[in-house]
Length: 177
Image (cartoon, rainbow, N blue to C red; front, side):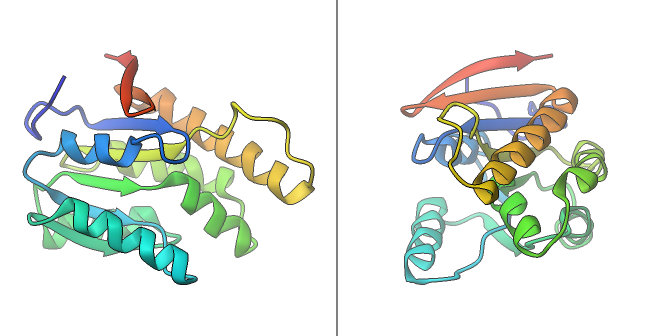
Protein backbone atom coordinates (compact mmCIF):
# COMPACT_ATOMS: atom_id res chain seq x y z
CA UNK A 1 0.00 0.00 0.00
CA UNK A 2 1.29 3.50 -0.79
CA UNK A 3 0.71 6.13 1.86
CA UNK A 4 0.88 9.89 1.79
CA UNK A 5 2.34 11.93 4.67
CA UNK A 6 -1.23 12.64 5.81
CA UNK A 7 -1.93 8.92 6.26
CA UNK A 8 1.40 7.89 7.72
CA UNK A 9 1.34 6.91 11.39
CA UNK A 10 3.56 8.79 13.85
CA UNK A 11 6.33 6.14 13.59
CA UNK A 12 7.04 3.56 10.89
CA UNK A 13 9.96 1.12 11.03
CA UNK A 14 11.24 -0.37 7.77
CA UNK A 15 13.57 -3.34 8.22
CA UNK A 16 15.59 -5.26 5.66
CA UNK A 17 18.95 -6.74 4.83
CA UNK A 18 21.69 -5.10 2.81
CA UNK A 19 20.47 -4.20 -0.70
CA UNK A 20 16.95 -5.43 0.12
CA UNK A 21 15.27 -2.26 -1.16
CA UNK A 22 14.33 -0.97 2.30
CA UNK A 23 15.48 2.62 1.73
CA UNK A 24 13.78 2.87 -1.66
CA UNK A 25 10.56 1.51 -0.13
CA UNK A 26 10.74 4.01 2.75
CA UNK A 27 11.29 6.87 0.29
CA UNK A 28 8.23 5.80 -1.72
CA UNK A 29 6.09 6.13 1.40
CA UNK A 30 6.91 9.84 1.35
CA UNK A 31 5.64 10.72 -2.11
CA UNK A 32 6.37 14.44 -1.89
CA UNK A 33 9.71 14.12 -0.13
CA UNK A 34 10.50 15.52 3.25
CA UNK A 35 13.48 15.65 5.56
CA UNK A 36 16.08 12.96 5.03
CA UNK A 37 17.98 12.48 8.29
CA UNK A 38 21.21 10.76 7.29
CA UNK A 39 23.21 8.94 9.95
CA UNK A 40 25.97 7.88 7.56
CA UNK A 41 29.01 9.82 6.50
CA UNK A 42 31.46 9.50 3.62
CA UNK A 43 34.24 7.66 5.46
CA UNK A 44 35.71 6.31 2.21
CA UNK A 45 35.14 6.36 -1.57
CA UNK A 46 32.73 3.42 -1.55
CA UNK A 47 30.54 5.03 1.13
CA UNK A 48 30.65 8.32 -0.78
CA UNK A 49 29.31 6.48 -3.85
CA UNK A 50 26.48 4.94 -1.78
CA UNK A 51 25.50 8.37 -0.44
CA UNK A 52 25.52 9.85 -3.95
CA UNK A 53 23.32 7.01 -5.25
CA UNK A 54 20.78 7.61 -2.45
CA UNK A 55 20.74 11.35 -3.16
CA UNK A 56 20.22 10.85 -6.90
CA UNK A 57 17.41 8.37 -6.32
CA UNK A 58 15.55 10.78 -4.03
CA UNK A 59 15.59 13.72 -6.42
CA UNK A 60 13.70 16.96 -5.70
CA UNK A 61 11.58 17.65 -2.65
CA UNK A 62 14.06 16.42 -0.05
CA UNK A 63 16.09 18.33 2.51
CA UNK A 64 19.04 16.48 4.01
CA UNK A 65 20.00 16.77 7.67
CA UNK A 66 23.14 14.90 8.69
CA UNK A 67 23.54 13.62 12.24
CA UNK A 68 25.71 10.69 13.28
CA UNK A 69 24.86 10.56 16.99
CA UNK A 70 22.06 12.76 18.37
CA UNK A 71 18.87 11.87 16.50
CA UNK A 72 16.56 13.70 18.97
CA UNK A 73 18.58 16.91 18.43
CA UNK A 74 18.36 16.45 14.64
CA UNK A 75 14.60 15.96 14.89
CA UNK A 76 14.33 19.25 16.80
CA UNK A 77 16.30 20.95 13.99
CA UNK A 78 14.00 19.41 11.40
CA UNK A 79 10.94 20.59 13.34
CA UNK A 80 12.31 24.13 13.60
CA UNK A 81 13.42 24.59 10.00
CA UNK A 82 11.00 22.24 8.21
CA UNK A 83 7.80 22.13 10.27
CA UNK A 84 5.18 19.56 9.32
CA UNK A 85 7.48 17.77 6.87
CA UNK A 86 7.75 14.02 7.40
CA UNK A 87 11.20 12.72 8.34
CA UNK A 88 12.99 9.66 6.99
CA UNK A 89 15.88 8.43 9.18
CA UNK A 90 18.33 6.21 7.32
CA UNK A 91 19.63 4.17 9.11
CA UNK A 92 19.58 2.81 12.64
CA UNK A 93 22.29 0.31 11.70
CA UNK A 94 24.65 3.12 10.77
CA UNK A 95 23.67 5.00 13.95
CA UNK A 96 24.46 1.94 16.10
CA UNK A 97 27.77 1.54 14.27
CA UNK A 98 28.65 5.21 14.80
CA UNK A 99 27.79 4.98 18.49
CA UNK A 100 29.82 1.83 19.09
CA UNK A 101 32.78 3.20 17.13
CA UNK A 102 32.70 6.33 19.31
CA UNK A 103 32.66 4.25 22.52
CA UNK A 104 29.01 5.00 23.28
CA UNK A 105 26.24 2.58 24.26
CA UNK A 106 23.38 2.85 21.74
CA UNK A 107 21.01 0.67 23.77
CA UNK A 108 21.11 3.25 26.60
CA UNK A 109 20.11 6.05 24.19
CA UNK A 110 17.51 4.02 22.29
CA UNK A 111 14.48 4.78 24.51
CA UNK A 112 15.11 8.55 24.37
CA UNK A 113 15.65 8.38 20.62
CA UNK A 114 12.50 6.35 19.96
CA UNK A 115 10.45 8.65 22.21
CA UNK A 116 11.67 11.65 20.17
CA UNK A 117 10.84 9.90 16.89
CA UNK A 118 7.36 8.89 18.03
CA UNK A 119 6.55 12.33 19.45
CA UNK A 120 7.85 14.34 16.51
CA UNK A 121 4.95 16.50 15.18
CA UNK A 122 5.25 15.04 11.66
CA UNK A 123 5.43 11.36 10.70
CA UNK A 124 8.80 9.64 11.04
CA UNK A 125 9.93 6.66 8.99
CA UNK A 126 13.06 4.96 10.23
CA UNK A 127 15.07 2.46 8.19
CA UNK A 128 17.12 -0.25 9.86
CA UNK A 129 19.08 -3.31 8.92
CA UNK A 130 17.75 -6.64 10.11
CA UNK A 131 21.03 -8.20 11.18
CA UNK A 132 19.69 -11.13 13.17
CA UNK A 133 18.96 -13.50 10.30
CA UNK A 134 22.56 -14.50 9.57
CA UNK A 135 25.18 -16.58 11.30
CA UNK A 136 26.66 -15.56 14.65
CA UNK A 137 29.68 -13.39 13.82
CA UNK A 138 33.14 -14.77 14.56
CA UNK A 139 34.45 -11.70 16.44
CA UNK A 140 33.36 -9.75 19.49
CA UNK A 141 33.03 -6.40 17.68
CA UNK A 142 30.61 -7.80 15.11
CA UNK A 143 28.65 -9.68 17.78
CA UNK A 144 28.35 -6.45 19.81
CA UNK A 145 26.97 -4.66 16.76
CA UNK A 146 24.39 -7.38 15.99
CA UNK A 147 23.34 -7.56 19.65
CA UNK A 148 22.98 -3.76 20.00
CA UNK A 149 21.15 -3.34 16.70
CA UNK A 150 18.79 -6.21 17.56
CA UNK A 151 17.84 -4.56 20.85
CA UNK A 152 17.47 -1.10 19.25
CA UNK A 153 15.26 -2.60 16.52
CA UNK A 154 13.09 -4.31 19.15
CA UNK A 155 12.69 -1.07 21.13
CA UNK A 156 11.78 0.80 17.95
CA UNK A 157 9.37 -1.88 16.70
CA UNK A 158 7.56 -1.97 20.05
CA UNK A 159 6.80 1.77 19.82
CA UNK A 160 6.12 1.94 16.05
CA UNK A 161 2.56 1.77 14.76
CA UNK A 162 3.74 0.27 11.48
CA UNK A 163 6.62 -2.16 10.86
CA UNK A 164 7.54 -3.58 7.46
CA UNK A 165 10.22 -6.05 6.43
CA UNK A 166 11.56 -5.63 2.89
CA UNK A 167 12.98 -8.72 1.19
CA UNK A 168 14.13 -8.62 -2.45
CA UNK A 169 12.31 -5.30 -2.89
CA UNK A 170 9.03 -6.72 -1.59
CA UNK A 171 7.60 -5.17 1.60
CA UNK A 172 5.89 -7.45 4.07
CA UNK A 173 3.80 -5.84 6.80
CA UNK A 174 4.73 -7.16 10.24
CA UNK A 175 2.67 -4.69 12.31
CA UNK A 176 0.01 -2.15 11.41
CA UNK A 177 -1.93 -0.61 14.28
